[in-house]
Image: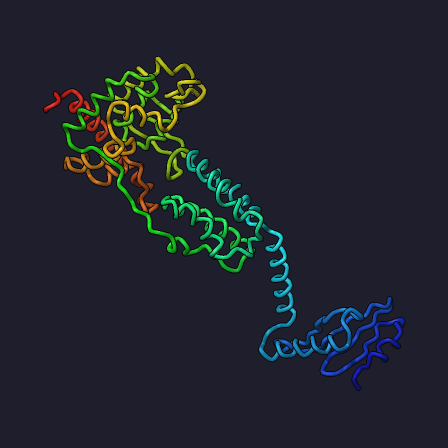
Length: 404
């Protein structure tokens, strides 16, 4: 006989647990202390189970029967109702957490772990994009409510004014944040994935680099004739001889240089690929560094190229460019990073050096991690020889006449 609401209300707790049966395995369990729980007796995976369906009177008789029928339907499909209900609870919990998590909160969580891994210049630029463009537009929105149109709207102003590279940077950062939200279970999909394809494509313009010998010799002579601040003078003179990235040299400190072995040990934090790197120093470079040491040495912590305003700061990344412009070299012709292309082109064209050795001098990452470890050690002597050859090559161009 099925239960009725009246029978349930009339039932009193006893000295032992009482079970009031309804139908199809549903019953109400009344404990001696008066607690009342709906239970469903069933079998799953050949094992008898007791499934809790809620507490009376919060769950009334009609609702209990509804839950019984839903549980039996799941059992018929081979689904454990208890596991299914727990999964639903977890989903609701995640949704509630997502609703409480704003885009700004997730962005700050992502930035706290990702930001410190970036080079200083990249970190500062990314921080500006977050503070000035992304967070003002999306910061207060629940991350689970972010739609592709919201992200595209952030990148649209930059794209409209022709700053296509900036629009792609903004979308890349947004993608990082949304991916972080996805990995934390705050969103079911990363709505930023693939959106860079909706932006105007980037136009990659090669950096200007001089590879014609007469012009290269003239540039070197102009650099050595520059009469500006000593930090900028020596920065412009030394950079061509090392084939390193401009920022790696600009931020160098004296503690990184080992003159007993003629090697510059660049810390991982300043390398693009985030791994420490050793740069062989040709005799000409050592001689220049010794001259520079008279100006900026004295302490291992000193910068090689202190700022014009303070010796505790370093020259800016535009100081060298400004000097080149003052010498009459235009942006379309010369840039500081272009020395790497000049080195790569002329070293490869000489036919004296293996391409892998040239790439290693440029600290380009090898996609094969095992091969990369081998190359870092195996190419050292060849790199020493190559950089010595390169220094002598530049010296010869610098000392040649304007028509040589």
